[in-house]
Length: 490
Image 1 (tube, rainbow, N blue to C red):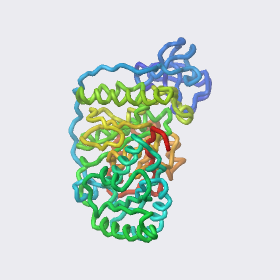
Image 2: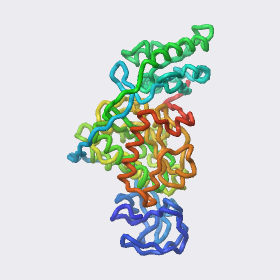
Image 3: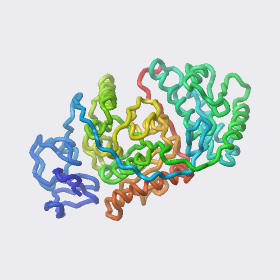
Image 4: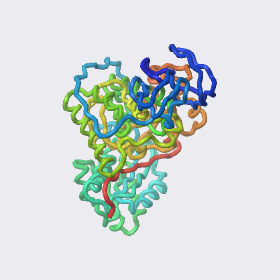
C-alpha cells in the first residue's frame, strides 16, 4: 500500500520475500530483502540524508544510501527531529457536518452527570491499604445485585512519602476517579497516618454526595473488613436505586489510545478510530486524545486544527512543557519507539506519531487539558500525559472518559477502570487473541471493509458497550490504574 501520493516508501500488508515483484499505484519494483508485514519498502533510490516520506510527511532521514526495493527501517533510517520546534498559528475554518443524534441506555446521576456502568469503586488513599481494598472487593461480591455492575478496587503505591506536585497529583487523580459517574458508589479507604488525609481528599472532592462517597479509616476501627462491609452494603442499596434509561449520545466522552502499535496501526485501527471520533463529535459528543510524546514529530497535524489562537497557544505550551520534562531528567526527547513497535515496522518517533495522531480524526481541537483535569467542552480535547498505557488510560478516565477505544497491533490484556474496547490493527491478531480483542480493523488492510465501514462499526460498538455490553477486558476482569510520578520518594 502507498498511503500518500508523495510517499517514497510503500507498506507491506503481508510478509514479503526477497525477489518479489510489486505493482500498482505507478509502482514497479522487485524487493531486495525479506520485508515483514507492516514494514516499509523504498519505491525509489534515496541518498544518505534524503527525507523518508510516509503519510505525506517526513518520518526520518536516510542514514545511508537506500536503493529501490530495499527494506526501510531502523538499520538505514534515523530521526529528523532535534530540540524544540517553532510553530505558527493558522486559523482553522473547517467544520464537521451535523449528524443525526443517537442514544444509549445509561445511568443519570443526581447531579445530572451520566454513567455507562453502575459499579462500586474502592479507592485506597495510600498503597499500604491496597491489599485491604482488594479483599473488600473480593469478599463482598454477594452485594452485586439488581442494577449494580460490579465492585472493584483500584490500588496504587502512592499517597504517602510524596511531596509537592506528586502529592497534589495523587489526590487530584483519586478525587477525579471518585467523581466519575460510572461509579454509583465509592468507598475511599485510608490507613490513617498517610500524607494524603481525609481532609485533603474532601477538599479536592469539593461539593460531593455523602451518600455516594463514603470514607473509612482502617486505624480508627477494630476490624476494617467488618466496617468496610457495612459501608459497602449501604453503598449497594444506594447504587441499586439507579437504572438504565435513554440518554443522548452527545453525553458520551470517549478516550482514544494506542499501545503495542505496528506498521498497520496508522492505516487501519487508528484512522478508523479517528473516523469514529468525527462521527461522535458530529452528534455533539466528545473525544479525548492524550500521549503527548507520541505527538512529537506530528504536532502540525493537531496544531493546525486548533479552534482559536488561545487553544493553539495552550497546545504548543503542552507540547513544549513535555519536552522540557524530558530535558530536566536528562532524557532524549525524540527517543525511538519501543522494541515491540520496531518489530511491528515503526521506525522513528515521527513514524509512530504520524500514525498515532490519526486517532484524533479531522475535527477541530476544542480544548487543551492539564493532567488530572476533566473535560469541559464538547468536541476533541487534547490531554497532557505520557504514552505509558496504564498512566495514560488512568488520565483519560480521570478526565471523564466513559470508555476507551484502545488500538493495538500486538495485543494486551490490560484495561482501564472504565470499559476498554480493544481494536486490532491486523486480522492475525484479532483471530489469535479472541479473549483480548473486541474489534478488527485489519479488515481494512484485507480489503474486506472500508475505513468508513469500520468507523461505523466502532460507533455501533461504543453505543452497545455504553448500554451494558461487556468488553473482553471487563469479562477478563482486567482493571488497573497508574498515577504519574515526577518527583522524589521520601
